Length: 434
Image (tube, rainbow, N blue to C red):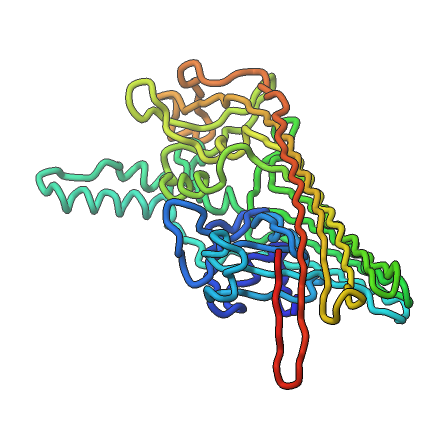
């Protein structure tokens, strides 16, 4: 049942982990809006498509489309694994088949309204803990002395270590915990679902509206004309109507619409996490305080080699923005015809599906200005005094904005099927042509 996959998450594919026998789920990223990979009985196709065939109400959909379907909308979720069960799907069934059926209204039933409201808290697990700057320098010196016993002391002086330990000046003796600076302790997400179902003798209906609001763990500052903290909005509409035109003819109209609006940094969050792991706490402060007359943000940095600066993860996070808007529409018309008047047990089904997907995105970036404390400008007797110097020609005053990139596709799928099922005494005879 669909509700067995329900979890406090907007990602249906992540909710499948450990709940479906024979299905391996691999979640590569915890970033909101990322679908998990999944395989049935491992990977059976190499060099080609390795994912299962996914059918929503008899029509193929992509993994991303499945990820956005709410569990409340699903009536049943089935897995086909062996060769005899998947034979009808040909080569596309080689990696297994997932059959998802959405809910329908019940005949001669009163209108039922179900409402679900959720607020969830997401907290990272096993997040790395970092030592403070003074400990880091002492451990660095110890490692250096262990490898080269001919030197008297390591690369960091006692003055620098003590100045960092006692916080004499956080810009001259920086001590940055990049993990605490870049990421929040937790994020809050909201979900809302309302569905209506019912029916009479001739018509049944099921309508659902689902809204997801996902935020990420980034704690990006609002220095520019954008807010590039992850902020994703998702809307899913499901509308299933079934009409008995005659006693032998039924027409079903199923519509699934998905609307997504994703905002966040253009730069990769995975790369940002790796930068956090590899940046030490004492090279430079994340940002210098603003002074009267400043027209730009002064990010901290230092020279790595020659004219190359190091990477400031805080600047990497704050100086880009990307927005992606996408829309997907699945419309399926099914006609079921009972042909008992020709011969008992004979029936025919016809299906036409129209899918339309479109997406547009654009981004904004700005080149950061990098500064460092000027050499010999700091007076230990006056801990608040220091001078800054700009590193090379870093920085630009104006934001660069890309054009709008648009993409999309359209698919029309048709299927016709004749079924024959009949019992003669103790014998059952069945056949299908599709």
